[in-house]
Length: 476
Ligand SMILES: Cc1cc2nc3c(=O)[nH]c(=O)nc-3n(C[C@H](O)[C@H](O)[C@H](O)COP(=O)(O)O)c2cc1C
Ligand SMILES: [Mn+2]
Image (cartoon, rainbow, N blue to C red):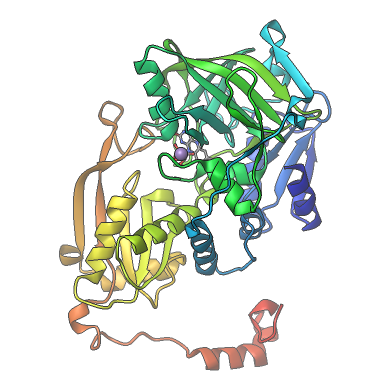
């Protein structure tokens, strides 16, 4: 993480803020940066009132395409479709590099056990006004071992601090960490867990992605980086702890010790899962570096750094899934910026009658969780461009023919439209916003300025018209 921060600072995308309070101010700064600053820099908070200098919080890690490209080892591009395409090709490569176990690492510089444990010594933020507490984990990496196979999963789940040595981890139904946790509970055993709260942003990113069950996110991180993640064996749990992590805890979750978790301002922009009892995590050990850095990913009404983190990644994975399930000529897959998983757009070059419906059905089954609308558009529409997608929906959809509703698809506790006592299912609309196959050739032509003519006028009069330099031929 520290090397990454140096590179980002060199790019002019890291800002230091001194004196912001853990209580709502850091969350507010993150919100302002994401909404008001075109540069969307990373922000490093230091000298937090009431805490030693050097105990820091970093927010807005992956808030620009440039920082995402840096993190995933991709060449930078300003085209979102191009970025998604590069990312999915890299993710499709079958390589997998397992972690390398090392004897020691910076994470073990400071160790606390038993009565010495005090999680309040870190500047744990309260992010949003109605949050029921302070959350050390928002950009966390939660490591758990499947008791049946020994496979280790890494997932990003929020972590609330309740006491010096007590936490809760909120894991939605169906997530890998939840399934693993429940396997231990079914055996009547506590579930061992190691949680990292600050780390290489690549580890955070892989933990947020829907890597298939049984596949290790750490192996994927190794493959993306081209070298193994260095880990130390957790002294208490044996779990692989990233050797360069900033702060890590080891402990156990208990099936019979429940404590109220939440509310928490969630990525949907609501406090929808409210508060409910969750299994307590008893912390047995804390490890941290000198001058540790918490990795914070606060939420609010999207877009936020939270939703931006999966803005291209989830579509990239879906694009690969569509290809594997036999949908040909997919030209792009995207999420509309403010909608997260709720609106997914697939663009195709139509090849046969029913191609659009095939793409819709395949996308519906692959990405149903917290989905609301899946839209298929023709390849003249940029699926990442909200205006173009809404234009296609407004002009190429005859609702009674082109919208289909699939009932009882996967939702979850975070879905704001489902009442608390009925969480679990929702419905999904499939919208065919392509020009109808039967009269594709006779569909009214679109009105647009030819590319060559457009470039010519930009080159000639762009300056006077206030067109950014980059749009010009040979522009930067
Ligand atoms: C910043 C961020 C925070 C997240 N917080 C949670 C959370 O609190 N609980 C949860 O169940 N999923 C959360 N998610 C989604 C999971 O990280 C994601 O579904 C991931 O695939 C889970 O890993 P798994 O597939 O191994 O279960 C979050 C995602 C992001 C990007
Ligand atoms: Mn997983």
